[in-house]
Image (tube, rainbow, N blue to C red; front, side, top):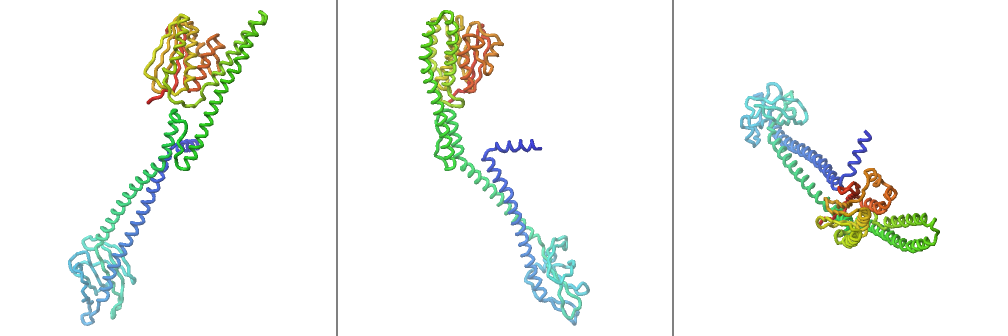
Length: 455
């Protein structure tokens, strides 16, 4: 149960703010309006019924004031006109009746030969009953004492309550129709309010997307006060990260210049060593030079997560490929290139040159007569394929070479440093690299990078 509850909370935590606000509004409208409608409907029903009963009570008072007892005829007499012809029409639905429950009974002409049931009650009371011909009636009644009769007289006034029911039903239809319309209007207005209120967040999201795509360096701070402060803080973080990256790359460049001279001096001093010691020192010095160049190239690469403005790939690599073509000609190697459509990528120019340069340099070093470069796009991914017709690598060596933390120069002399730098750059750009045997027999390196810029 706790895991299901935790999973539900996790799913709810990822819901959008718009959905949360709309759900809150929906719950509020769904609860408030029905409750208000029920209360209003009940109040109107009570008020309308009370008004109907009051009208019948007023008629009862008129009847009660006009009733007398004729001692000579020994019968009840009512000679006061009510002014309502419905009491004269047979089974009209409007009736009055006076009775002592025995021999003395007086009724309106509309009752004809029917009588209303009697419930003795000294106080004025109202109730519903079924009258002549199954009519639904509302009755107001009470008991009075009339001299010289010893038994109390029960006076009843009844009227069909279908008019009352129709009035209540029409009011309820109007009420619930109005509440439904009001609910729809409120939901629409509040949905527009939510959309308008969250518009700055959507604009901020668009700004972040522009920064991610490299089209902008900072967020727009022309936002409401609460978001403007957040945007300013994020801009400060972006600026700090950019300064750290630039400082690291400048430091790497300065370190390269600082180490260049001591290494050159050490190479000169190496010639003065005895022949027996020179070879060992030369190997160690070469390893030192390779390690320095490796880590300097790695430090000068762009930081992970940095999004650069789009650059055209072909113009960026043309100077590099021209130089490599001349090197291939001197070595008697044919350099072939295959390019797809115009390609733009979110990469630092130095990083893409470093990546392609090391791949091509490694291929030219081991190729017998041919090196092939293929560049194409698959959706958001840039696919670089470099193959040669050299001795290649076994499947086990390829698998070992791409293991995390492995350096290829430790497994195959002369081929590791360039591919190690490529491995680091591919990882920095969240890409993938595959090493296989080429159809020409040599090594084929396939690099996939999610850096393609569209539009």
